[in-house]
Length: 227
Image 1 (cartoon, rainbow, N blue to C red):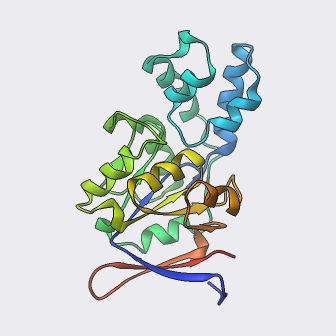
Image 2: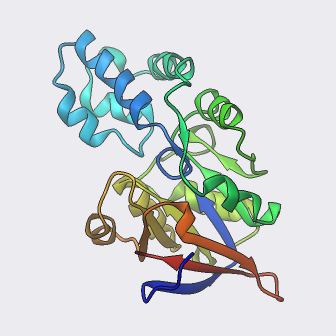
């Protein structure tokens, strides 16, 4: 990380990462699947693609698709269709290095994707898997509700107020903010202003702009380059 006046160092007990758009780029695959289902039901894809990011599949179905799709079985089928599309996936720059630099008990993932979708993607991209991994199966309320981030912190043995959340979508930033965590927005989809308007304290271009070291007391020092 090059010296810059936009670099800030903060301290945290633990880190909680969103997955899609934060650690891995799934934009191409996600939009392809939702568009296919829009065509199937004669729905305009534009509002769906604008509002689908960062929230569970079932929630997207209830927001945009006809009532016949509002079941966990239909959501699972849609995610199953997504699982077979792995070629368009990419690791967000710096994500692999950052995760491997962290102590195992200091980080976790909370994703809106079900395990059948999230786990194969992580395996395909050869990213490390945390011991605490929260999905919609573990919670009652999806993003933008903070339940998932609160649960991730709890399972790490931490107060979410002492954690940093990494997010790229509005629903996720709001969830992280409302959990009490400090939120770092990833500018995958949204601008610095858009992310900060909904609660991000900082934003970065990608994970190459975050460097983490362990303090003598076991807390984490994060240097954040917002350039």
